[in-house]
Each structure stands twice: as structure tokens, then as C-alpha cells.
Image (tube, rainbow, N blue to C red; front, side, top):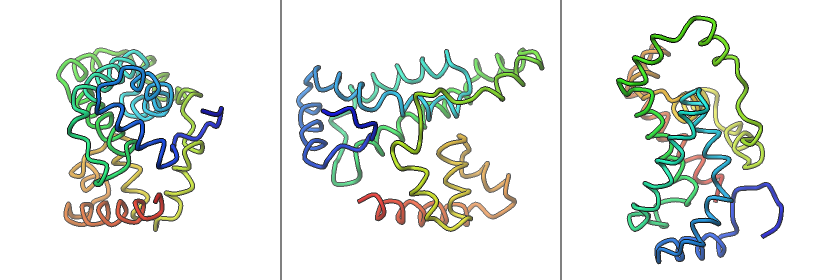
Length: 186
């Protein structure tokens, strides 16, 4: 492995990693962690907006990925996309949990403003995985929805409400954007 900061592995290397993870190879999990954890943490942090919760969600996600790896189907998408969705869903579950809602209600105004202004950790840099450049190729309506869904932790219903557009329109734009992104990534 080189010191290249890109997340994407060459297809052959990714296939080998997937095969080793499916065989429950613990050294492959270490390689997986080294390769993907910083980017996954960055995405999680952007959703939960708290370092300790982001660390907890990342740990929970890694355990879930390890235990559910047999269900990963490489023909349905790239490894990073699959694990990103797991992390995103766990992050959303975290911010919707009762414990999070109660905890966030008791946070002082000054504390919550500081947390909102905190920059994402320097370990996550979307430009290193080409995500920023790729999403720029989407039309603005699609890009806005993808940003809200995948980086801000909104649900489709919340996006529809926030943008004051029908839920069906959000779903259609998201589905179309994902198809476009899929073609651009391959």
C-alpha cells in the first residue's frame, strides 16, 4: 500500500479485501480500518456533531460491518458505498434516539453554538476521495438533496419539508443522482 490519501482501492485490491473480509480475516479488518475509518468518522461527525458520539457510532458501525459482512454483495455497489450507508444510518439513528434528544435539550446555548461552529476533523477531507468533485457534476437540485441526505443527516421526509417540495420529488431526484454518481464513480 502506498501513502496515497485516496480511499478508493483499485478494483483487484478491493476484490481481495472483500474476499478476505468474507473469510473473516482479522488482518483484513485492520487494513479496512486503516483505509476507511477516517473518512467514515468524518461523515459520522458531520451528522452527529459531537466527537464522543461520532467515536461511539464509528465503533458500533465497525462491529456491525464485521458481523454483517456476509450480506455485502459487490455486484450491488462498491464497498465504500455499502459501509458509508451503514455509518450514515447508524448516525441518523443516534441523533433520533431518545438519549440524544434529551441530551441535546439540556445543552446550554453557548455549548450548542460552539459545537455547531466546530470544524470537521482534519482527518476527513472529502476532496481526498473525490467526492466533492463528483457531486459537483450533479445538477444543483440533485446535489442539494444528496448533501442533505448523506452529509447533513436529513431523511427524505425532512428534505421534502425543508425544501417545501413533494416527497416523491425528493425520492426521484435522490434516485437519479445516485444513478449518475454510480456511473461517474465506475
